[in-house]
Image 1 (cartoon, helix red, strand yellow):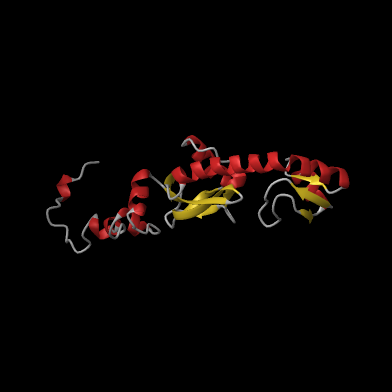
Image 2 (cartoon, helix red, strand yellow; image 1 turned 45 degrees about the horizontal axis):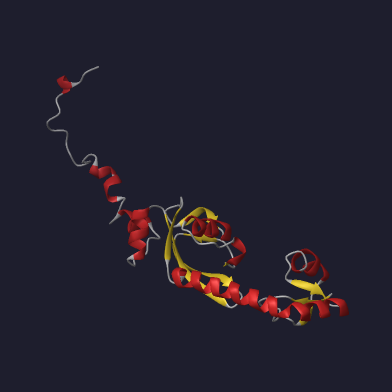
Amino acid sequence: MEVILLERIARLGQMGETVKVRDGYARNFLLPQGKALRANEANKKKFESQRVQLEARDLERKSEAEKIAERLDGMSFIIVRAAGETGQLYGSVSPRDIADLLAEEGFSVNRNQVELNQPIKAIGLTNVIIALHPEVEVTVTMNIARSTDEAERQAAGEKLDSAEAIYGDDINENARPDSFFDPNEDGEGFDEGDQTV
């Protein structure tokens, strides 16, 4: 199906261009969202008569996105999640989770603007691109950790992907049997009469 774009759409085209897209994409996304019109003579005339208003609306959206981008670009956010000792999350961090976090922080971002190829499934620092407008993108850092203390350590540059890195030296040293009793001890100090039954 051929459509006339009413705004710039990434990997598709600029405002006013006539492009060929799959029927389902046009019917289910572009047309209902008001991002395109079917390409016919009546709609071409309608678009040309409204072109100035559409360009003004697009410039207004772009300027709003640039204002948000100035505040948001380069910021770091902490997400606390449960994870195993190897740093693997019990679940994942999805674009919806990131959009909800940004909304709590006062930024109007929806999940479709968060560009993640796949959900985040491990603790650590992850750069995430937020497309506020087709021409305005910012990068924010998501600090995924088990606790805020751990997040601060990660932000300082520590890599917390093993139990030793998280809990200190060798965490198993204190769990060895010889730390509880000495197998070489011959039992001196122990008297048969000291037993209580």
